[in-house]
Length: 89
Image 1 (cartoon, rainbow, N blue to C red):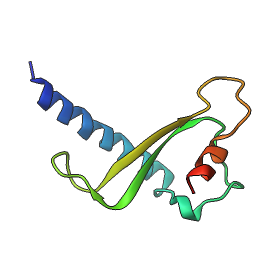
Image 2 (cartoon, one colour):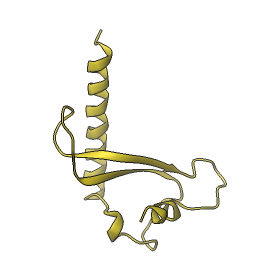
Image 3 (tube, rainbow, N blue to C red):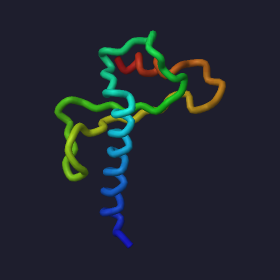
Image 4 (cartoon, rainbow, N blue to C red):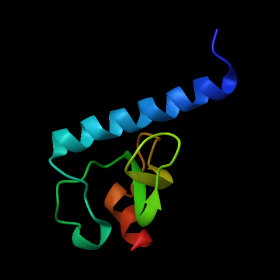
């Protein structure tokens, strides 16, 4: 049985593998400063922010997630994912 540290590293690497597959499916990462509310946004969602210069170390190569957010996880919420993202701009 793997120890907690090696399991955590494995889980982090798996997380980034999933993000890589999502990026491949979308064609690229969306850059917050380059998007707008008229784009086809889901009403609810989870979002991940990357920041230039923040790179992964022990878990692999590439940009590191610096913020994770969720929005409108409850059905019936009136605000939108875009409204939440707009507040980060």
